[in-house]
Amino acid sequence: MARYKIITLVDITRSTPSRTETNKIKLGQQANFNTLLQTIGLRSNISWIQDPVRQSGTLPEPFDGRATYWIWEIETERDSVFDNGQSPVGLLLVDLDGVPVIDQLNNSVDINPPAFKTQHPKMNIWVEEINISIEANI
Image (cartoon, rainbow, N blue to C red; front, side, top):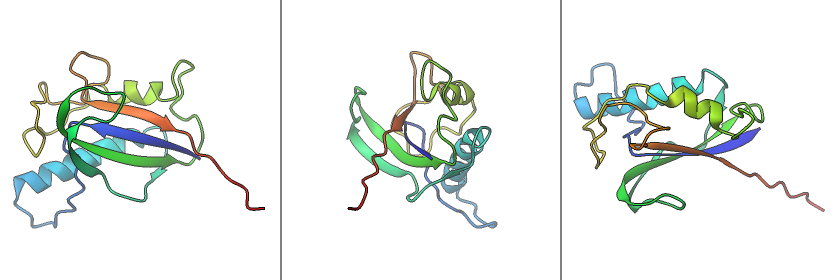
C-alpha cells in the first residue's frame, strides 16, 4: 500500500449533492471530485480517510504563492502503481494532465483552460508520494 498527497487549485470539494440538487456550485464540485477519482482509478483502486480539505493562504512547501487550494490524501492498494521509472507519481501526472474540470466554483485562481494541468507553466495540481513509516510494537 502506498500513500499520496494531492494539492490542487481546482475545487474538488466532495459535496455529495442529492439527485434533485440544483445548486451549480455543489454539482460542479462533486463533478470535479468524481473526475479526479475516476482518473486516479484508471490505474488503481484507492481509499481515503478524509475527504479533500479546503485551505486558503500560502501554498504548502515546496510550492510558491497564495491561493485557495485543496489537499487530499489517498492510499492505493499496490505500491509503485504510478511510478514511471523517473518519478513515483509520473504516470498519474501524465494521466491527469489536460483532464477537463469545471471552473469558477470556490477556487481563487482562474483555471484557464478549465483542465487539470500537471506539466505546464499553469500547473494547478501537484501529487507527491508520502513515505509511510511502520513502527513495530515491541
